Image (cartoon, rainbow, N blue to C red):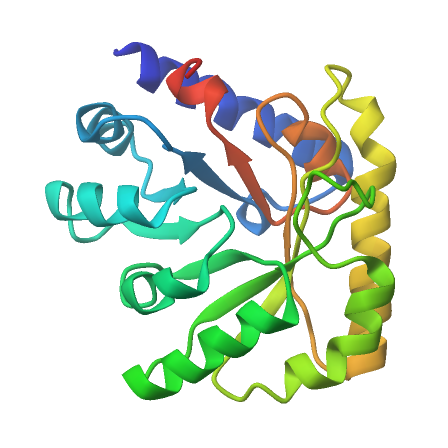
Length: 226
């Protein structure tokens, strides 16, 4: 068994344990293997170990790697998206996880209409209102929800967040609870389900699962450091 296969097995075991602690079905949580900066050869090792969903931060990396790997793989863009890259990425990914402003949502909607697509997206929430991070504040997303839902090409699936890094997983728990609570509030406000919560990374994904994550984005714990 390769190192990557062994790490994936360990992560799946930890996901199973976290679901058991939370009384959740393992099928309610999906692992996004974050393959940014990693070559196609290493991604193929993860594929051989049964992984099929991958997350990339940069449009260029998706464009380079996707043709080198099995066509059945699913891809999420998990990093910020610039307006001039929207047309390139829309046909390539299953979901854009980091829609961080009304402006980029409008750009995606307009170009999706031109391409005949209905992209799935998540709204990125800046849970700690950090100036260094992208995303809507809770107040912004509440105020702009009606305009976001008026963008008729977008399938808004839910929310994602990246809490401030702290080596202790418990430090993230409050932010995960905050995202889950905001999701419930927006569902009531907008009258539409938001089933996806993308939260949790290599150091805190178990805590995220305990607090309701449906996608966990794990890179270093699978592929090693960058």
